[in-house]
Image (tube, rainbow, N blue to C red; front, side):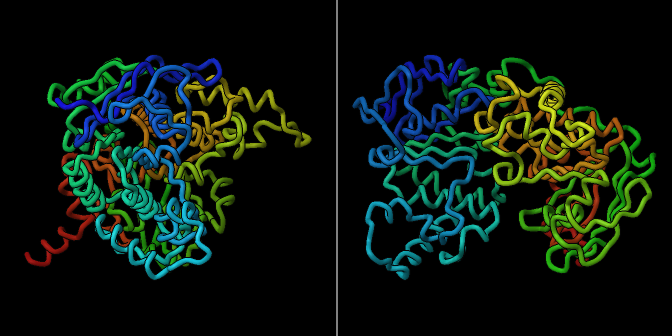
Length: 506
């Protein structure tokens, strides 16, 4: 084997009393896609931030092309040929697509005026490599999450990289968008670029990566060819234990109880068209469909985050008038956004303040004064219930791993004592161990009588967790599946319209 392109030796990093990395070794060959795996909090992001110069190691060294280097910031990393696509989108919302893609070049050039025609043309070409026809002159803030993720990737592709790091790049992408991305990655690999690929999606890792390094609690626990492992073996190395029942047992008598939620002919006049469904007490209802089908818009219309133009909602048989989200919360309907960073948590506030932020009456005196001791107790109670890993409920949420940030977002909703939970991509960007924990939490809530609706792009999650699944296509209910009929093929047929074509041909 040729000398490694990138070598990290004995990397250590502490944040206060917490050891994020303890003597980590890592190597990357030119022309390989190398998976970096581990639970949230294992140290993956810290290691990547050190390679990108965002953090400086307390000990250890980095060698690139056989030469020890000091990477004192992201600009230096780019000069050395290192590109990083973060899991959390970090684009300028008020700038255009083209401006965001070529932001490093624009900052370096500092031109008095911009040749927008040339900039847009170049941006169009790099987006076409990803199979996209996004308008380069569009404002990034007006685009959906999936398009923003592709722009982040396109931005990295414009750099003259030797090393490309991708952190959960497909979390917000459709299957077709993901397939286009992997075609580009394999082209880059063939050109000799070394790619570090971070993902919790086992199928992607085994399909596209050749080697894997596993971190656990800030230490190396495994490094070697993926051909020596199967998915169960990789998961065991990541979590240090057998997960046992990854999905909790399903409800045995779905549909036998009175509905907790009834939705009839819900519409918003734009993306949602006459959606009707019920949620039984004790069940977990899945909502499947392709990206852009209207799943999130349906949930947001239901809970008052988007204005409804028609339809009715009943909770435990009682009709509701929901005009804004506060109406839904008072009635007992809470919504978890798919965009954790923008709408799930307050990153710069402590855990305790986050969890109590939607239930201030629970932690205030009868005179309306906030009681910090009550806020602290509520956060500790819900943190323990959700197995939240932190150094205390007074630390900022920004310091937590992605999976633990997601648990804080869920705890915020549980603090409101909801009757119905609308969970939009509840395990996006969450490692396998935390996913299993969240699955069991949602099932426990359903067993306690909470109506749980799970919107997910991961079909195995819909099939493994949910008692029934509705498929949304073009803002309408395309069909419902349950029991043995709930297969990936059945869901995809309904989502893509193949089932309808088959019926028309018959």
